[in-house]
Length: 118
Image (cartoon, rainbow, N blue to C red; front, side):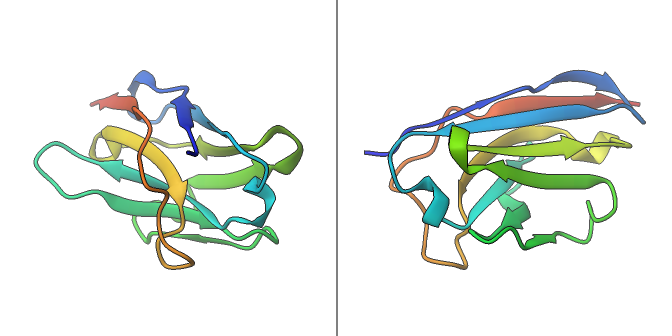
C-alpha cells in the first residue's frame, strides 16, 4: 500500500511563504499525476494544484500566481511552493493522486497544517 508523508507546514504571517513536501512510497510514482489538496476548518477538501507525470501543471483560481507545484521523480517527491500567503490559505494540506486523472490512492497521509495569521 502506498504511503504518503507530508511535511513543511507551519504558522506564518500573511504575505509569507512556505514550502510543502510529500514523499510517496512505491516504484510507480513517476507514472502518477499528483496533486495537493487542502481542507479548511468546516469545509470540504479541495484540490489546489496538480501536476501530470509529464510535468504539466494546473491550479485552482484562488492560488494561481502564488503557488507552484513541482515534482522530483528521482526522490518520489511532490512539492508545493506557497508565496504571498493569505489567511484563507489556512488548512491541512494533503498530497494524493490527481483525482481527475486516475483516481485517488486508497488512503491519505496525515497532512501538514498551514496557518496564516493576519
